[in-house]
Image (tube, rainbow, N blue to C red; front, side, top):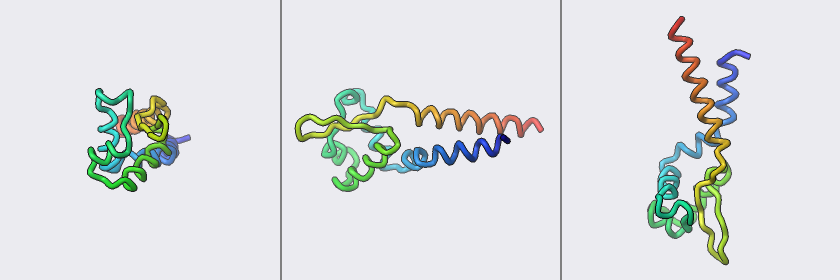
Length: 112
């Protein structure tokens, strides 16, 4: 399989994750969830509304996209949901691998 064919496949396999990361509102949610003071306890939708300035439906929509790519997960305490960054790094590792392959192809092409 050629390097470019492999890259096309890797881009296709990572496209949902890249789309999830590419939105500034989702980036703000991710950054809020990285706060060392809350990283282990998580944040509720209302907390994320305060941090991002988004409405409840908008925060919920963005959380769904982040959950779908397994970057965010939640735990339930009674009637409250606490959202946190997932420790599953499968998608992040796929993205790292893709970027490494892009770098390799660029280096090889420069040497031609």
